[in-house]
Image 1: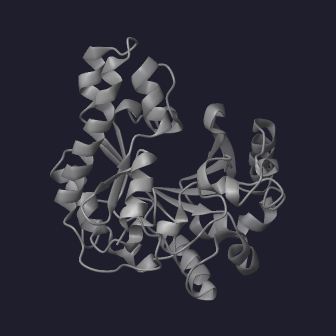
Image 2: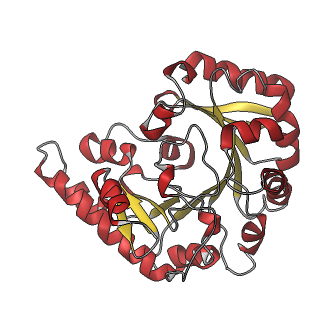
Image 3: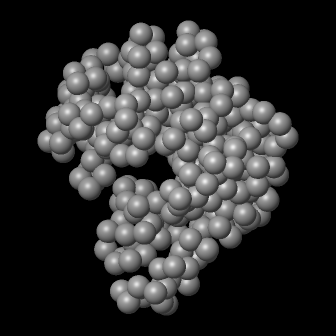
Length: 313
């Protein structure tokens, strides 16, 4: 459970706590879209998601890793699930309401198109990616169903670090639906780099095995969801390791690979340096290195987010 001081700090950062363990926030790109309609995030460019109708949330604020590049405040994290779990419907309802409250302040901006603004208040895309590790939430499969069936969301994206394969295997067996996109984030290429960069809270060897087990499992569900291997490119850490990532690409065999440049944001500024931020040309070069050694070709580019999307022919 969060202390009052932790809650206050999150509130000042524009997070809103929902129930006992969930959170919602308006992301940078949704704000940009609501303000001027022109700038949209990679999810709209690559996958047709309406940026202005995105609900970015997490059903759990805790995480079992303390990754160096994470912009979140990891002092609020804990290693495992503790206590009772709020119901999915209550979490989603609360997140939608808190999101509306955060958006209402934009009505005072003269640039806002009020006709579009009303539609933005009703999200139809969920990004389960805000903070924490969502697969630690014990009712995640039901949460995904609830988005689709009870709240009629068009799309749901789930981002995981892959450390809880048993929860990934429950999605689609304990639920009717898979998420539309299922992301697995990877920055390391072996156990030592994993311990150095991701700072797992519990047994590193076991969690690293779990990540690989999740990759193997995700290779079997490509006919049910888009699987995406997200590699965060961190300068002076992993950008010369394209060959070392090849084995994981072949293991997961994802629908897409997304290579995203690290951004010097939030709490990561206390762990990494500006020198760790690659420029666009360096991110693109990394993508071309992966292209040379794999069956994946560059399919999409989103320079503002420094994301290179890759897929098979």
